[in-house]
Image 1 (cartoon, rainbow, N blue to C red):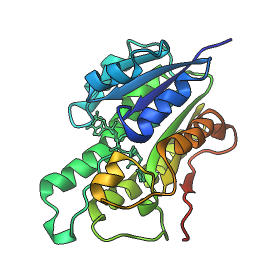
Image 2 (spheres, rainbow, N blue to C red):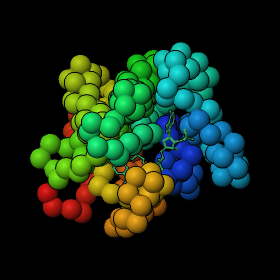
Image 3 (cartoon, rainbow, N blue to C red):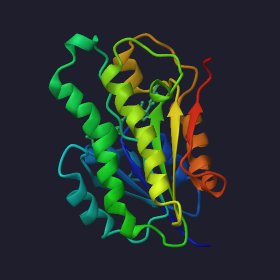
Length: 230
Ligand SMILES: NC(=O)c1ccc[n+]([C@@H]2O[C@H](COP(=O)([O-])OP(=O)(O)OC[C@H]3O[C@@H](n4cnc5c(N)ncnc54)[C@H](OP(=O)(O)O)[C@@H]3O)[C@@H](O)[C@H]2O)c1
């Protein structure tokens, strides 16, 4: 059986952690788990033989860090850009540092990770999945306090379309999933007491199947994954 390699950015908790566990349970996968918290990943994933953990910071010299890392791990089949940063504050109170950080982690870091990974993708077929939010999906319900977060996630959707146009003749596919609420630390910190209809394990099952299969049917698509209406 051929081994497939999946890189998951933002793997230390929440949906990313569930994604690592999901792929690790599939016999044919090697998982590369990335986040700032190497110690936690080693503790949580240390017993999973197919998982390799590396420290990776989307706020720090991303392209250089990523090139060094990707050149050391072999051909990559799948990349999931799952890391995210959410600030929930009234518009006028959002600081320039919070705005910068939102865009750095949710857009610029993804942009540079993708620039760095291209030479190391499987030349026969590869799929990059960006994890955006329903808040960044045009026409969806919007929430007060999320102007920095949701605009940066909308930009990630737009990046998916623009990248896909530029790479339409290539074997590299990119798609974007806009998630509705999922019960994670990010959600509890931003909206204490709110109960989401889905947990990370449920969502990770969908995302992993989508990562493995969707590029056979679509490229450059922005897909809402939500139980709310609209
Ligand atoms: N939960 C929801 O309701 C929801 C809804 C819509 C969209 N989403 C999106 O889904 C994704 C996962 O969300 P989640 O709820 O699981 O979030 P989470 O619990 O906050 O986890 C975020 C992950 O991103 C990593 N991360 C944060 N800053 C980073 C940085 N500078 N460099 C590298 N990694 C970094 C964190 O790891 P370290 O701290 O170890 O670096 C962590 O593993 C995010 O993109 C989020 O925007 C979530």
